[in-house]
Image 1 (tube, rainbow, N blue to C red):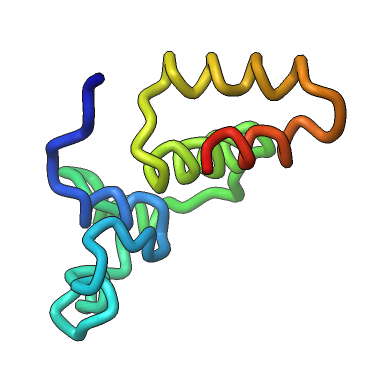
Image 2 (cartoon, rainbow, N blue to C red; image 1 turned 120 degrees about the vertical axis):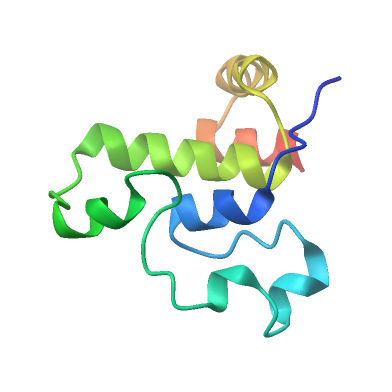
Length: 102
């Protein structure tokens, strides 16, 4: 099974909140998210602060999905499998998905 091995603090900065991907280090003052970087990572991250538009409904849903994937360390294909399984179960799909992920 594959896993993300890149810089995880960038993922926190991309989502705009702490995802606690580094465990106790995220609670310490050494956490890179705590520094004065109020902008997303990447080449155009600083510019995005000035050109920020109102996020669309799709972008909000995508950010939440990506956040859940990153917290649980699941890649896209596996996440889709879990979602299909959650849809088949009786009850609320979102709650079923979180039960499967746990």
